[in-house]
Image 1 (cartoon, one colour):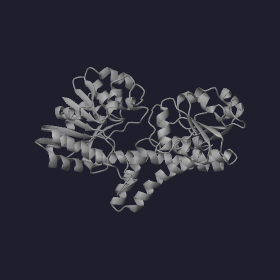
Image 2 (cartoon, one colour; image 1 turned 90 degrees about the vertical axis):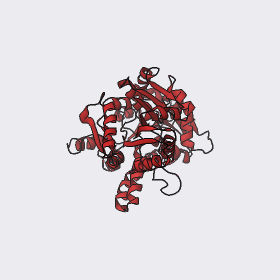
Image 3 (spheres, one colour; image 1 turned 45 degrees about the vertical axis):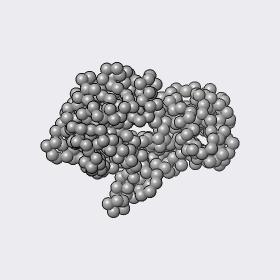
Image 4 (cartoon, helix red, strand yellow; image 1 turned 90 degrees about the horizontal axis):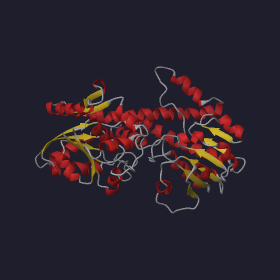
Length: 452
């Protein structure tokens, strides 16, 4: 069997590396139009950072895992084609700011139809709106040159930072297909691959539309829990309650559970906001205005929480951050990844720059050029945005520290040394609640936590 994955990003690369490792008899080829991205996958400096991923890729490369720019050749040779291309939120036209932009999905479908003959299974791996499979099937049928296709939905449920562990032992593998003999045969073929290492009772099969919708709903529910506890964090600050204690008490209820009740500066990443807005657009399309407004409020609370954190910094700095230095520790949207998409740090840095502050950023995995690109968003460069090479450099001469990403290394910093090199009074804003604020206060910091 030969597998081709179109798209060498956060989904395609790790997923195919795991399949190649667990099914050494299957030839797995990952293709992408970006030659620089493919070159990175073929090097020891991968384009994405995930704990354990380098070792997994090395295990397969040169055996049954190949990274290539020969998109058409790989499609032509494959029995199963995974589609893992980007589906960003539209920035133009109908549905701008909410709907998914499916131009890359459509382009891939046309390329598959152009070069394929014989029977092939097409697997939707990208996060897509409900009924996208219908679009893919229409394009394949209208442009096919003798190919016969079955389209499956197999959404990814990876959490960045734990992608390898999630692939190795997933909560579930979801496969959606048509209720026809051909569709069921395709589902079985894909299920048999995952069954090489995933227990059969964790492989869930549904119809196509349930599978497509389940991905959006799962992310919406998780993001909803984060926005819910973040909204309560503001109430805790106003009343003297401790949000961690509230979350622990609520999470002990078996009907609720403890996961995703960690208050923070806000959620980020490539999925939560994009998928919720996609769900909002879908509800609006079907005339479900109240449902759309409900889910949109989850995003609004998240944006409000980011802004509230930045406003709190300015307020503590005697209502003026102008010409004051703020050290931003962490830029990735969460620890153990170099992904910055929708990171809370972006909004916080922009808000502080708008207050004329000098912002010095440090992150152990995000390159300086990525930080500048995200914050400036194509605007003119500014000397007030600096990227430091270590946290001590970032904090030297600062009036305040804003801890935005929960990297483990931030827990073990020498905060007495950091405090000694700061302008006094020195402020510490823990946006992830990972530090012992009483100990920080004993050092001399004026401390602020989320929901404390």
